[in-house]
Length: 339
Image (cartoon, rainbow, N blue to C red; front, side, top):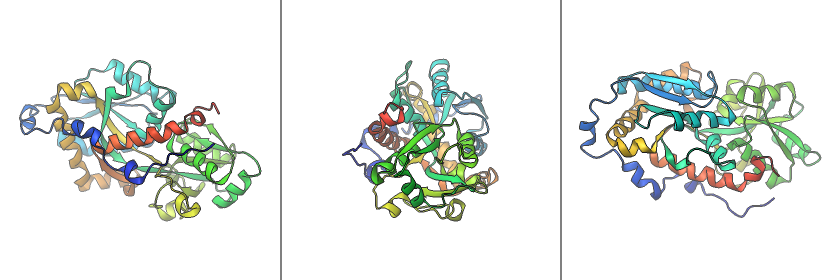
């Protein structure tokens, strides 16, 4: 299966003019005056994954500092199920667009989910991401007891037989990474959704699958039981924590954009339109967290990877959304298991 489209890194990571209007919403000089009393109660945050995972860890580390600037508390509510669809349906269908409820999701997998199957009760444009917390590249890994010790061994074996690949969700940036590798090398891979990062790691460790793909931050935390063989990024930013694994482009001479998962806060577009003053407060206080030394300490305490913390506003989130959905569309049949 071949594709003629290749996104550039500038396209994948850069801003886009199309979102300039949205980015400007709520930054008028008078916004701070109108938003002076906001928020006057706690903010509810819908998290469309299980409690205790990577999203939960990032949310707690970030919100623990953000509350200092917003001067309110955050109330997380977890809605796992259907690869994130349940949480978004709850957020869009059962929460008022008043800027007192937010969603904290993983943009990559969740946007790819909409590529595979559009939401039924709302449009993707009915909400927008405004606050990126991190960019976490995908990687290829095996259990420490696996016979595979290099990505070249994986590719060589996958040219002889189809290898099974565990993934937390079919529609995932790391899934695209391994499909792209197969396309470029002639290796044959069969994606097996194992429902969540914990199960994906376990699949590789127990040998249930030949190898797995996942966000590298989660893999680095389990490095005593797994071995990383390839990183879908321009650089292996975690070095030894990812076994000094090579990057796909350096090792294979390819040109794949970084396959990043990215946790971010989102909000109803209707809330942005109706309450630009409140949205301005959210944007301004969100950005302050990244320069607060307590935030780095919180990330370290939560055993997160500071190297992946990466501020992004409306423009950056929109550029990421556009690019990941574009490349996802090229692999739609494979991500949906129909080909």
